[in-house]
Amino acid sequence: MADEGNIISDLNLGNGEDNGPAAGIISQYVKDLSVENPNAPESFAWQDQPQIDVQFNIGARAIDGEVHEVELKITCASRTDAGVAFAVELSYCALVGMRNLEEQQSHAFLFAEAPRILFPFARRVIADAVRDAGFAPLLLEPIDFNGLYIQQLQAQAQQEEAGMGEPVGHA
Image 1 (cartoon, rainbow, N blue to C red):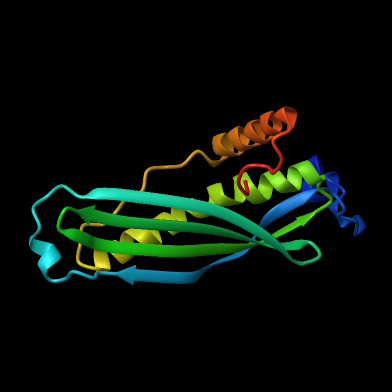
Image 2: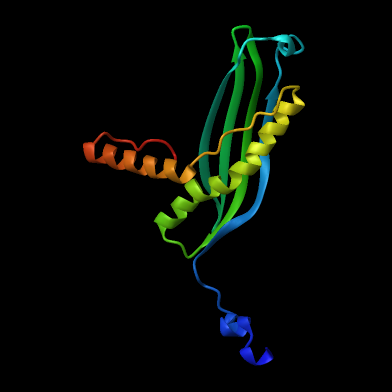
């Protein structure tokens, strides 16, 4: 087996040059978390089926050269006719490193792929926060960030073709 060669030397990784395109998550963190249980303890006895409202937004900003911050904001609220049972606002972020990517590729990574990677972790934070507020954990449905990204691009292209001015949304 030793005669078959070393996979590292076969890939020529020892030449000191690593200038290929790359993108990845450096770190991820909760930037802001707010949990409200405004009508406790009365809300624990409510029997009405709650209406769950979930909103999300994606933002990105350059930090330093090849490093960007991607922010996934998720807001969830449970309401009945009696009032608000709980409200959770989460800003879950990641530092993303990217190099040697074309603008289109880096934009897609920041607004589609990075949120897709972050979502399961943000989903767990929200589930735990709702459970810690005294309710059954709120398990958010998966989100197709890549599909939403493509829809946003198509809507923006249609809007620009129609000459309607500003692009739609951030993603």
